[in-house]
Length: 76
Image (cartoon, rainbow, N blue to C red; front, side, top):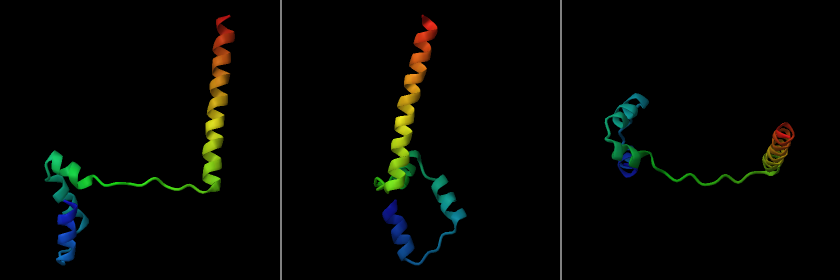
């Protein structure tokens, strides 16, 4: 389907967004899956983004320990 879209684009046919949505809605399930399937590579994160994610991981581990401690003390 992607190749067909590339052929349509290279042939000079301009499809509006409503035409494209109509075409996608008329496809069968397996055709629609094939048309939408494309590889999305992993994003390379920068320093601040990595720091935020690691901070959230550490916070999650800390909060899990707090909840486990609270359940343990309430059960005693």
